[in-house]
Every structure is written in C-alpha cells, then in structure tokens.
Length: 612
Ligand code: F6R
Image (cartoon, rainbow, N blue to C red; front, side, top):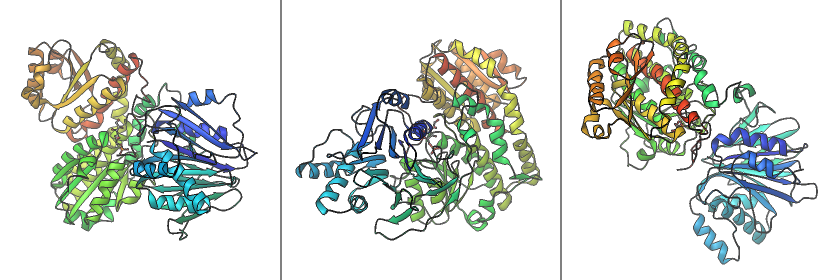
C-alpha cells in the first residue's frame, strides 16, 4: 500500500517521478504528491487528493524543476484521503520532506510528546509525526539528517519504507526500511528509489533491495552507502532485474485486467516451463529440501484474499497427492491465533506481491517456531521470497490490475506441481496418475486459449446481469474455492455483493435468498460430484432462481436445466479450477465495465497490502 519513488541525479526529476507514480498507482490511488529541491535549495511540494493525473494537472503551472525529489501515491490508513493528508509531508520549518509507505504504530504518543515541545501539525497522518520527529532530533541534537533518521528509527514502532530530503544538504537523500519494501536502482548518472522495481526498470537493471533496519545514503556523484540503525556498514548486493518495460504496459488492451486475463496461456506456459518433463515434475525447491518434505507431518498454507483461495485448492491437491494433512489459514488470523507450529510442520506462504504484511508477519512466527517455510510468490526478490527458506516462483510477470487474475491461475498451477512433486517424493501417487496430470498441465495453455474464445459470449451475457445487486457462486470439491474466487472478483471490481458457497451448504441457509432477482453461478464440470451438483441446480431452479452454469462441453443435462451455460474444455478434475476461473474472470470484468467501474483501480482497494 502506498507507493514511493525518488531520484537523485543531474536531470530534472519531475517527469521520472510522475511516470514512476503511474507505475506504482496499483498500490494506492487516494492522493498523490511530489517534493523537489530547486536550484535555490527550496523544497517545492505539491499534493492533490485523487489519482496521479490530478496531481499532474495541478502541477502544470508550478515550479517542478530540480534534480533531487521524492513522490508518493497513497492508500489512506491514518486520515481521510485529502490534499493535506497526502504525502510528501514537510517538517514544521519546511526544511525536510518525507514520503512513507507503512504505518507508525506509536504515532499518537510521539505526537503528544512533540506537541508538548511546541510542534504543530497540519495533517492527521502518522507520517507527519515521523518528519516532525526527524526535524526535532536534528535541531535539538544539532546532528546530521542521517543521525536524526537513525535516532527516529529507534523511537518509532511500526512498518516503514521512507525517503527523506533536506534542503540543507540538497544533494543527498536518506532512505530506510522496516517491513515495507524499498528498491534502489543504480545507473551511471543517477540513483532511483521506489517501492518496487517498476518505476526504475527503464533507467537501469542494477538494483539493491534494502533489508529491514537498513538505511541507504544516496549522494549525487557518490557510490551508494548502506548502513544499519547502529551505524554498521551493510554489504551492498547489486542484483540484475529480469523485468522489461513492455511487461508494464497495456499492450493494446483497454485495461490491465483484460490484458492479464488474456495473457494466461503464456503465463501458465511460463509457470510450467522446465518443471514438467517426461511425465514427472521437478521443482528445485522440493529437490533441495527432500528431507523437510519427507518428514513433514502437517502442512499449513497461509495467504490473504485470492492467494488464500489458491491455498484452499492447494489443500485438496496436497492431501490428494501427497497424503499430508493440510490446514489453510488467513495469515491475518493465523498470526494472532497463538498458533501451534511444530518443527516438522511446513508452512507454505502464498502471495502474488510477496509484500503482504499479514503474510510476512505469519512467516516470521512460523520461522521462530522452527517450521520450514516455503514461498509461492510472483514478485522476484520480494520480502516474502527472501524471508522464506525456499520456494517456487509462479513466474507470471507483473500483475498490475488490482484484481488478481493471472497470479491466481499461476498460484494454482504451481501448487498443483508442488503437490505432485511431494507425491512423487513420498510415493503416495502412482506414476500413471502423475503422468496423466502432467499431460493435463502441459495442455493447460492451449485449453486456456480455447476458453478465452468465450469472451464475446460472456460479454453479451454480462449485459443481462448489470441490474443485479447480489450474486451467489456455488461450487463443490476442487471448485468450492473457485466459487469463492469468482465471487471475490465480481464484488471487488463491480461492487455487486457476491457470495461464494459450497453448493451443498446452500440448503443450510443461503437458499432463503434465492428468487428471480438473484443470479446463481454454478461451477459444474464433469467430476465425481457432478450428479450432486445437478441436484443443487435443481434446488435453485425449483425456487425460481436463474442459473449460469459453467460446464464441460456437451453437458446436455445441465444445459437443459440452467438458464445460461458457459462450456469449457474438460481437463483432469484437479486442474479444473484453472480453466473455470477464466470465464469467471471475464464475467466479472464485463459486468464491471458495463456498470462503468474502474476495473484496474477499484475504489478503496490497493494491490499490495503492506499494512495490517
Ligand atoms: C483480489 C486480490 C487480493 C490479494 C490479497 C493478497 O483480487 O488481489 O485479495 O490476493 O491482497 O495479496 P498477495 O497475493 O500479494 O499477498
């Protein structure tokens, strides 16, 4: 949540900062701002409620010249979205500007103490407390900005990635991180900082990921220095980015979400490349940790939102193939549940961004209790990827649309391969079954491509349902989580209330909701629960409800019962969640578009949830 970007170099930084903010807008878009030191050593700061384009518009007639600057796009935590609460925040005397991603937990205590010392505050944010504290320490101790930032870091409790500039040292930026991500890009003529690599990639592919409690000192014309809060120098590990600018553009599609839905034949191809060969699965994370997987008595999958849904499918997969008991937990609940974790447990953390605060905190607890922690992440070099003992990247490329699509199918595909790899290792699944599923995995890109041809049909179908205020999604077995995910996609981008339910549970309550106004999406591929789900459809129809059924091609029984059918190719049962997700994603997308919603940036949401 919140994106920060900064530049120290010899060119005017404003265009880079604005472009960077657009790249980071997926992290939050309540307000945006920039602060730039001009040639007279004045800090010019401009802030606007709303998206980055509003800021750009407001800056058209302003002095935005300068070669060192910071910028921010916000997802509000403390204080409503407004001009005054937007970042950058300035210290009281206007000499220091700061941008912040994270939350300062003890901000009210610090604020009270600063007010007692005579400080006055303009905003209701936690961040303003931090910048005022830094100024207070600098001025009362008569110390450098760096020393003041170090001391402030000792006093604040919470999560932060910050970038700070001071007009008294106008060639230097100080950055620091604790539990919120920060990347530094190193080019010959400039240094860049950002919450992720997307604003940096077109200028350099040489990056340093700051670790917790580290401070970067970026001075024009000097090499980057990194130290920790205790002033000890930290080694600088320069890594090479494998990201390209074209991956960050819409590529002719109207929205990132649609582009990402249509990319799935390719992204699933990338997820499985080199991992499914000769009827066997090879995952280096499993190969290198055979003992941990062999001796595991239990697997706990943690994640949030869509990643939690992928985890529910992972449970079925791992229990079916590896015969290890699996529990799936919301990371946010798990971390506060005084969890029982043993050293022969494996904790699998599923996260697209690799930055979700609750998932990261749950990983830390699991590590402290001696579990082996395995990551299933998309963003390479992300905090979760680095905090886990080992893992498997899903390799679906940058996901920019706030609603997760290709990352979900990538997560499910990787969890399928993981379940097979553990099953192979433990010999709990026979070679014939492994071979058949491997064959199915290899065919997924082609089957997804075929399923995407339904786009026009689903677009037409969506016109009928823009009136709806509620939707019910039903599924069973492997596709109960698909129902949850379909409902989440619809509600988050179209603002239509939608609930996912295990189909057989409907009769225990939700059946009371069924009437002509409530569309029910039933996920009903031909699997071992097919007959059962036909009964569930009949129960909906008997009460006057309308049914949209996602079925396998040629399913005449359900076609005769349902109001609308969407026919998808048949695949082995355990792979069906990947295929049925495609029409559910398209349905949500088209309904939201018909309702005039901003599908890439739905209200109140942010892609990367780096606060609790
Ligand atoms: C929904 C969605 C969210 C994320 C959740 C976890 O479309 O994208 O529910 O799945 O915020 O994020 P990650 O996977 O980055 O940990």
